[in-house]
Image 1 (cartoon, helix red, strand yellow):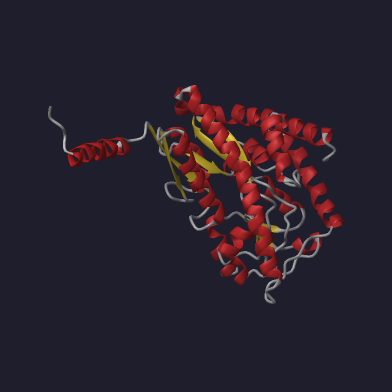
Image 2: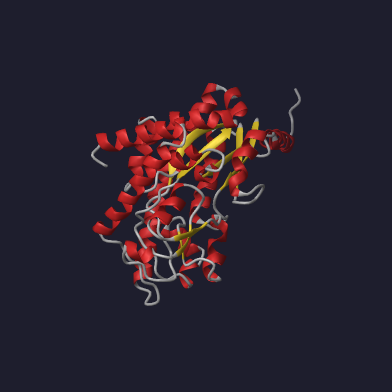
Length: 339
């Protein structure tokens, strides 16, 4: 009887393992995000992409890319539809120029004072179905809707009332939030999030509607915008985690379920982890004599929301889909005593 030498057995096993792990994923996708690679929220998205690869036993491999990696932030909808990239994790308000309904559903400004209310609306109040009714004709499918915790407004000047927005040059993305800042007397400037830092540093803008407190601090924005408004009262943009519709339609059911479950989990993870980071950042900023966080009082927030509700009604008249979004969101808010 002959036996293989142990060394040969080990070598053969290692070779088989090497061949197995080297096999390409069944599905390899590039998904462009709306943040720079250094922002905490971007790193969380990367973590979840890695978890999905593990959850699918390597069948799905997702590369999350920072803003502007392949196309500009307003171009990812078309890029996903045409297959230049396979998906995106971004604010649909960037696509308001293609259909105002993207801006309305992507960021119904002033509607949500708690991110979990927004997730409930999207998951259980008809929001996801409305979004896919809107997005499917553009060749994309919403896997899951996420959002951030309450945002901040970094500012180079103190903002202690709605009146202080008069003439303020504030960065705002195209869409509803841009119009509402105009309505309260500000001078909005349409800049992508990647240009907020240089815009504030060089005085192109005085303030910015720009992500969460910890993200802004990580970018060093408070060095020259030392008057952050926090917690935010103005904006809670959706993060539309979307895939090319043809790719989605061809996926087996078990992978669709895994992706939906994973990205739903990411939505809650983003809120909880970023909120914790924001609170740590807030305390550090309060301890910094050169930075002066401020929280608008309730009566000033009410003025902003009243202006926002006027803008909702105007947007509702833009087309059939904007009316559907208005009716659905206001019914949800009213039923829960949130309006």
